[in-house]
Length: 490
Ligand code: GLU
Image 1 (cartoon, rainbow, N blue to C red):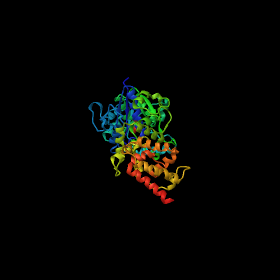
Image 2 (cartoon, rainbow, N blue to C red):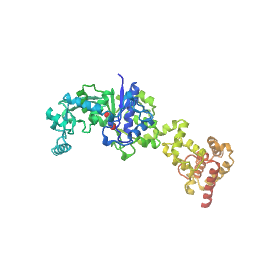
Image 3 (cartoon, protein in one colour):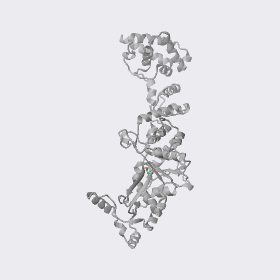
């Protein structure tokens, strides 16, 4: 079988984290099976259309590297109509849906409905107070052929509805198993709206059929629409694709992932300095368990491991701490050049310091950075020394005099460092340790006051890193400053 999947977003806003996962699963599955993935923009609900949403979606997909092999767009996100394959923008395919809706009317599987919105609202209201299911009452099903022709000729506004047959509808979902629903629970769904646009249900079925989609992988929220789709496939006499509905992504409190509890747009995560590859790794594992305890997977490894049968049924919690941890892991794996490019992109200002100093900060921070948007505040930590209390210079059971003694010794030592030592972090580290070891001093008694003198903070980078980043002049000045504080307090 030639596997073909699709990602079919509606341009109603930014690409959501859940949408990215759907796109990625479709991509992984198609890639694993040696198939193709189609991108289709589902814009038949013109009222929900958001200006710029298509461009933003394409941009985000391009950044993540999810590639679709068919669709109207080039990978760099520009609109490009490809004659052979589309364009797959539903609003440009209205005639196809209209033709198919009318075919269903001709074969008795659908019917015209001229009911006004007032009548429908009234009907709904009555059904609601009678605590009945709200469904269309088939008022227009009894219209004669002549009457319909007459009303159509008069240009009366109409919709086309599916005539849901009696019985029940059953389908198999790879993740959820067999699902059966009594047809009496299914409304005579509108297929073609009065503005000539199809509803989602008609457009999705017609497109999935003609685009040769073999596997529909999408969010669980669409599962309730499947019976309507199955009825449509049957009405057209088409073969069903394979369905796989993936579980919801949840907040920590198990509510549906929402903006109220943090970002949901992929663009927001990218703007905060999460790496696309970390995001993909993280979201892939929301609802999909490859095996064992491995957490870090390349796209190739994920492709290798991916199987619809391995997707969980229950909702997956979006654990931001885990995402942060994973992003840190990816940052550490970045090639130096790429890492520096990211750092520069997020630095936002020159902070009035030399490139060399910035490079030294980037270098030492690589081991602990969680997100690139932390870069400006990390830089500030090296540049600005906060007001601090003399007591902070004292390590545990030691005292001010002891701190003073070591700072004086360090000040002398650092003053005499050869130029080459200031250039080399390991050499700085070696020299300080030599002082500690040759004098047999508990290391905290030396390293703590040195670190506080250089940073003014309870928590900071190591004293060696601070010396290397601050450089000779600044380091000596900070040590002198600390000694003056001690002198002033005694
Ligand atoms: N257009 C739908 C959306 O915006 C997707 C429906 C589907 O995948 O069938 O998410």
